[in-house]
Length: 216
Image 1 (cartoon, rainbow, N blue to C red):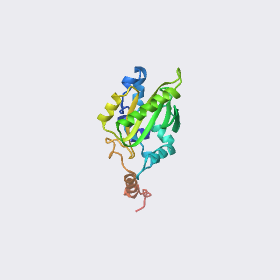
Image 2: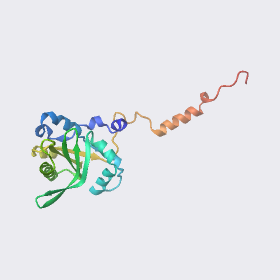
Image 3: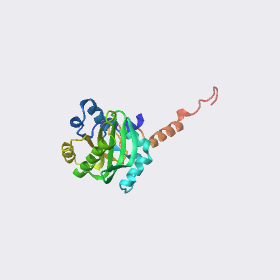
């Protein structure tokens, strides 16, 4: 796990998502909530390298649920996919629903393969309110948090959407390519370089056994 955190540059991504948590979550929990949200999320573990849609991406995330939970961070417990909510006479389905044990709160996760737009925040906000009414238990759960993970976002558009919402929402991007910190890239030898070094060492004269005394 530590190797994964180093290889994916966790320090540079942790707590970097755009959120309105400072304004919508009490001070005691807002910093913790902020630190739990990354930007971007590293979804390279899905193995997706060709064209895909949202269903393919969500299938791949749940087929690798252990890696997905590790990437989400500490305290996340999986509740369900396409989680059904009966809102009045209408059925709505949340992409992915989690519960964070550290925050004692449900976390609604919506995954979008396109670019973020205002309508995405509105949809997410509706799900957050619905969870507060239907799932949240007074005295047990804190207010529900929404997290939208998209392929691309304009930070200004995202910030305006966050300012327009009174609900705790975060907006992040994801990447399907393996994330490596720039400061480390190129400083660690590749497997091929290590193999060449071992072969060169084995073939060098110094590696030959010393001759017995008296041998010519």
